[in-house]
Length: 252
Image (tube, rainbow, N blue to C red):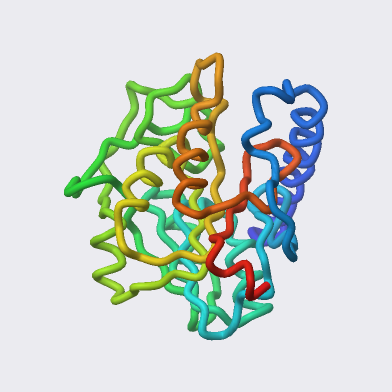
C-alpha cells in the first residue's frame, strides 16, 4: 500500500511539473531568460522525471564516471538513470530529515553512496534550514523566501565543496548536479575557486525565489562562461540548466 501511495504521489508531482514547465515556457519574458538558453550544440538526453531530471551528455559517461548530486529530496530518478545506463558511481547529498528518512527506505545499488549533510561555503559546519510552509514539501533552504517558514528552522550539518572532495579523495568529477533551493549562486562561486575539474554542471536555478527585476543567475552564468562552461541544455521552465566544459567538447 505504501508503494502504491508513493507511486500515485510521484505521478501527480510529475504531471504538475509538466504543466508548470509548459506554463512558464509560454509566459516567461524571453529577455529575462536569454542568458539561460543553449549556446552550443552537443549530444544530450533528458535523464530522470519531469520534476527531478536534467539534460546530460551521455556520451561522456562510463562505469568509471563520478557523479555528485546535491539536493535529492525524494527524487533520485536522475541519479538512478546514470547508474542504470552507465553504472557510474553516484555520490548523493541531502541533510533534510524527510529526504534522509526516505532514502533509508529505498533499495539502492552498491554504486549509490548517500551522505546526510549539505554543501556550504567556507568552514560552516551547521546551517539553519528554513522548512517549507507547505508541509507536504520535502526540501528546506538556507535562504529566506516566501515559500519557507522563517519561524520554523532546524540546524543541519554542512561541508564545503573542498572538504567533501578531500574527504572522498576526488580530484575530478564527471557530473555535478546541484538543486539546493536558492543557495546555488554562492556555492557555485565557491566551487569555481577550487582546482577540481568538472566536465558537466547541472544546475537548478531558483531565480523565482528572489524578488528581482533581473534574474539572479545572470552573474553566475557569466562567471561560469568565463571559466569555460557553456550551456548545452535547458528545461522548458528555464530552471534546470546544463553546462559542459569546453575542454571535453572535442570528446562528444
